[in-house]
Image 1 (tube, rainbow, N blue to C red):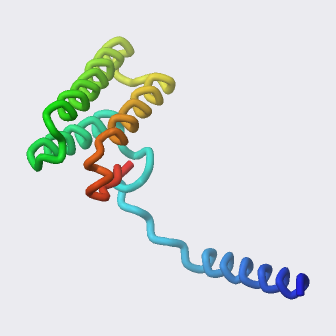
Image 2: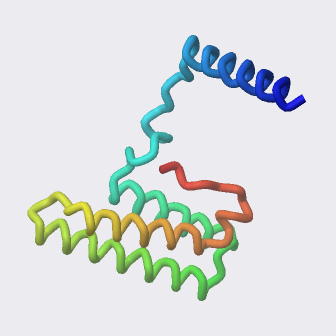
Length: 120
């Protein structure tokens, strides 16, 4: 029985690999590819979601103020770091800002309720 199970597993694994090798999936549009969004695009996307949440009532006043304040702090740091570095961000700064944007995005409860996911 164990031998039969291993044989079936091997056949399934190799047939799956052959299918993958023969027909690669089509490439995703650039907007859906991870790491294709720069910090400014992420900031703009989250800003639009925050504003839409306020307009639809999914973000109440205190939550809107909290999340908007966090995003404003990221914007200020992003602009200051770009100015200090002459444009590009160094990898640790970029990683820090990306992490902070991800946390802000995760804290907006209505994104989860509306089944929206970040595109990056």
